[in-house]
Length: 273
Ligand code: BT5
Image 1 (cartoon, rainbow, N blue to C red):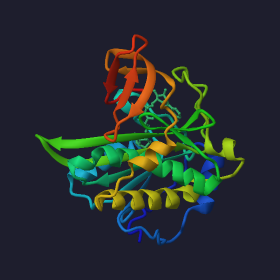
Image 2 (image 1 turned 180 degrees about the horizontal axis):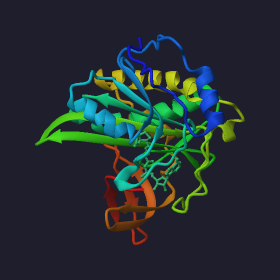
Image 3 (image 1 turned 60 degrees about the vertical axis):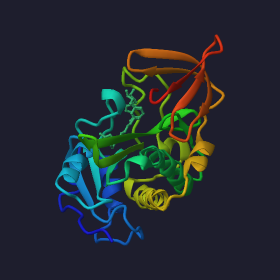
Image 4 (image 1 turned 60 degrees about the horizontal axis):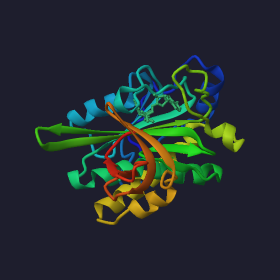
């Protein structure tokens, strides 16, 4: 059951059309998500810096596991490695979940973000999407969603993990100068008129199912890998200052990518793009 829906949620924003569509389908009263953990508290904001940043603060204040922070708009939406995540008001699903996993589960919890997104897209639009290593979600080869997984350590102790997901619903990011690869949004690809409220329950239910499976010791890696399109492809992976080019040979259960260089040598990349 959703316990907190902020009264401030979904107040006026700049994009009238998206705002009105979201408002029209915004549940007026708490509704039953049917999840065990994820969304036990759901806190909605019209505008915040970043759902990941706010979720992190909440985790530090002892938020319940499964607390979801949702925003209509982010002023400092974050991508991985210091990059930005763009959106306009009401045009995207922007959410983060507070989790307290064991350190050994981290790779799988990270995978659960993109896998839940693939499942949610399938369920709500009927479209098959794929995962580009490590965590981008693509439809017809164009990026529609991204996942930002941040772990909070105190010394060597894992305090919390924040799983942030951004899905473009109507947002067209292609005009941004730093967008160097194809991007898209869900409504363009599906021809539907979806809002945040059509997607959110499905996304949270899939996250819930996957997280409970991970907690119960069941392996989600095979299902995640089946949705990954990167293996066998020519890739250019940047990790820090290093750029490696070659064929993506395989992905290990810990999420690392084994790349075969043109000279036949292999290198394992833990993260990159
Ligand atoms: C990601 O990073 O793809 C992770 C994005 C996670 C966003 C969510 S929104 C809710 C939560 N709160 C946050 O603050 N973040 C999470 P990365 O792989 O580094 O991709 C970032 C790159 O994607 C940028 O450098 C841009 O080139 C491009 N990009 C930015 N906005 C985009 C968008 N809306 N759609 C597609 N590509 C985008």
